[in-house]
Length: 487
Ligand code: BES
Ligand code: MN
Ligand code: ZN
Image 1 (tube, rainbow, N blue to C red):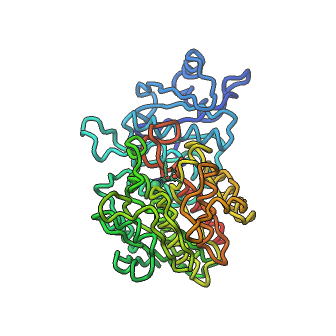
Image 2 (image 1 turned 180 degrees about the vertical axis):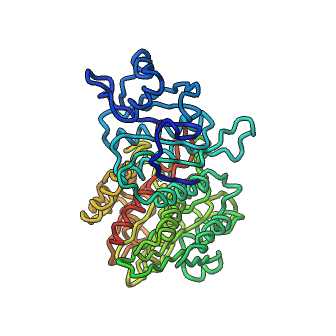
Image 3 (image 1 turned 30 degrees about the horizontal axis):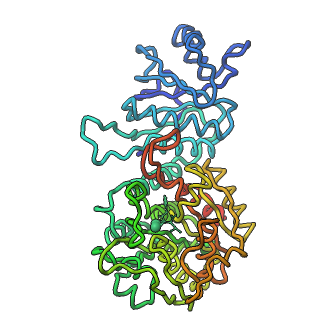
């Protein structure tokens, strides 16, 4: 994939698809101006009347494909409505353009949207690449539509650093490929092999603890959850050391490569998508990839607890009690509440690093969060208002949905156990909050935020934002958050 900026004239830009953004003002009383007026001239003044005729008014989310008949150099022309021109309307237009580009089999896409500054232009390209993405590895040849490889933005004032958008978009797609791959291909050890790809980046080292090492180190959660599978669990630790780092952040990702529920087995309908349960690890590894590839001035330690939650004679059982490294004992009441158990080991490990100021975790943790927020919002849990605002602001910048949820201490009551310090589930009530409160027991002396990505990490069906499957949602927002931390 290649992203670039250009100032070539719109009519001579040679590409498979030319995307032109138009707002309602082009259809008002005054004469249209800008790119759409230039194109209208090339079409002998027949483009704008044609759009009007077809009831195109430039509204958010609207789009029309217009045959170019060789009047311009582009093979196809897509006119997209940009509504009020706000960032959220542009993001919708960009996603739409990305999807259309795929269905039109466009390899090279040139885009002209009015009034873009360089920062917004980068984010528009990223949204287009995200809209263009589709997982096709196992599709028959004749049903595949190639993803676009060349993206050009026209007429941006003071073009910015296109490579930044390219890097961010590339890693988001990397995360999506990883989530989409079937659990037969991505299991703890193969996930670790993918994580090792990061070691090619400057400043990055990757260390993998095998099952024996996890056990020896007292990583009881990873060990218990993973013991029912013939695919042994691992702990992945990626570290990135920057030049002149301004901050040190630890990232923790849930890497349950398949969640059958274990002995508290899921019904088939709930299990069908559970290869997505390593989504948190894909998010955190991809974010690490961006930070390292862009050489941002923030040190990172990224931990992934990777395990397959399976049913066998070796499975961990209800009533088992785990004694964690930090002294907390946990009684297992439901083997399907496994994510928090593997995250706990990683949070303990991250808390041990003296220079780490902030720990963020991402996990497809609870169905309760999906019930509360649906597919378009990640649940944010933290006691730290400043950290919450930084994360919310980053998500807003990147057009991703993030919503703060209560980390309400009195509900810790629901986790009380008769035989251990806590149990691994509460009641049905406030399930996303009690999961977050569970995690809090394993964080020590750091700013901490938990991101429950159970809704947005994976789309059961394609929608206006993403094709069906893994989304890589929050990768870009987290990268933005970390870029700001890097000063
Ligand atoms: N991986 C699931 C959560 C999930 C649900 C992710 C839907 C993506 C989509 C998690 O391990 C789980 O099973 N959670 C249980 C917790 C319960 C047993 C307290 C749940 O949400 O039902
Ligand atoms: Mn589960
Ligand atoms: Zn799970």
